[in-house]
Amino acid sequence: MTTEHTENAEITTNPEHSGPENVPSQSVEDQGRALYERGMQYINGNGVEQNFGMAIASFLDGTDIDHPDCILKASLVYFLGAGVGRNLETAKMYAKKYCSVAPNGAYVQIANEIISESLGAFNAREYLIGEQPLAQSENVAAAHSGIQPEPKFRVILVAAVFAILVVGVVAIYTFKDSLFGRSLGDGKIDISDIISDADSKAARDQALIVSARLIANADERKKAIQQQETARKEAEAAEEKAKEQALEQARLAKEAERVRLEQEAKARADMEVARQQQRAAMENSRSRSSYNSDVNNQQVNQMYQSAIIAMNQGQYDRANGIVDSLLQAYPGNPNLVKLKNDIQLAKQTALRRIVIH
Image (tube, rainbow, N blue to C red; front, side):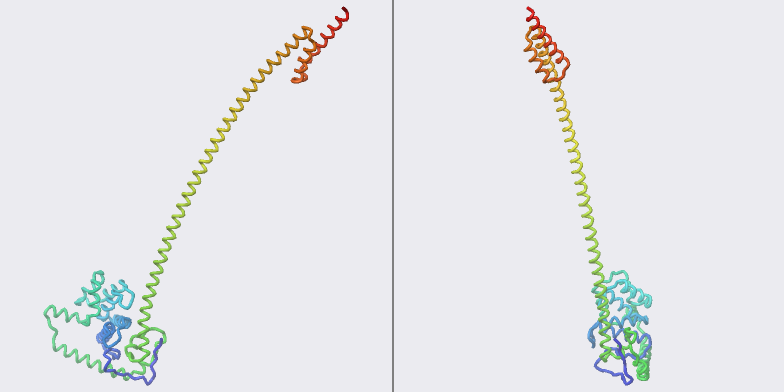
């Protein structure tokens, strides 16, 4: 959002508005003090609506000019996460800067506690909303040591500050066109424009943008962290599931291998039993065959001898019957054929003898 001031823009002073929106050109110390007081107004809602975004913006502007009040307040804001995302590294950075800018300050201990992360949240909040400027550490230290600042020096300091304020107001009215006629064309937030024209709607819109941007950045960082955590948990769950699946597959493969080996062993055992049974059957068959062969041979021999005896006794028909039965079992057997011929010859010889007698 861009804020533009016309050539007829005038600086208005609202006596009821106690904020340091209309800060004239001052010394670095007075500018830092004004930014500090403005930030504290927004922190505590004194005379303005409470707005941590505007408060941190004022404190950060003060850190740019090394004002110790603003530096330590900025550190406390980031330490607590007030209006911004809590960032201990940024808080420690500003705490170290405070120690560098005000090494003898009375609040160095607070900065050291922030650096060591030993500062309690309650104490940090009390220090953040405290109204006493931390840049008065020299006066605080002097009060603790019993040394009082020189009253005359105070008078001179007040007079000098008043003179600077007067000169600053005159300078602002003199150069108001060049100071306020520019815009924020580059899109960056210019806190000095907001301070100079806080009563205008555009300046209030800019203040809201500052706060919205800071809150949005914090929300985006929180969302990104949550997404990273979710992605990490999902990756861990997927990895665990993959491990479980791999273990289950390995177990199933091992079980399948065990079953296969058992089946192969059983098949080999069955084959061995079958071979043994086959060998036993073959042995039995050979035994039966040999027995039958022996029996058959004895019967054939007995029948053969019976045929010879019948032939010798002249019982040629009985002898032929025996030989014919044997030839049916053993056709073409030369011994049986010869015996049959002998029987025929003997029968014929016997018949001739009968005829002759």
